[in-house]
Image (tube, rainbow, N blue to C red; front, side, top):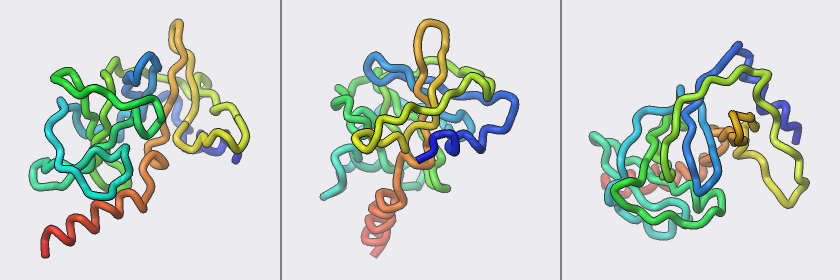
Length: 166
């Protein structure tokens, strides 16, 4: 896979990203995908869902899947408490919540600041990574939201919504 191809849509001079933490690592995602930032609330579990899908919530009449990025990225499960953050995103024209450890800041990156993710071979799948950027003393991992949640995973919730309405 050519990692440079992931950067093709970043033809603007600069772009803003919302940075967040998972453990000790800094991540960021395109701020234009962010709908809102909320605290964690109780979820309704979905039977047979992948472990990273914590369940769903009712957000103003919409059934919204909640995904734990720590589990999706194999960082380990978070302890949920009053400080746990859920970032609501627009993914494939759907609202999806992602659980993160904390939100840091809005950062502005120039296209030249973003490097493609390294190629580690078949043992590592970089499809979730948009790129890497250096910010002060640390590296920021840019998340590719469009590939983070597959259409099959979103389909789980479509099937759940249809069954719930019948």
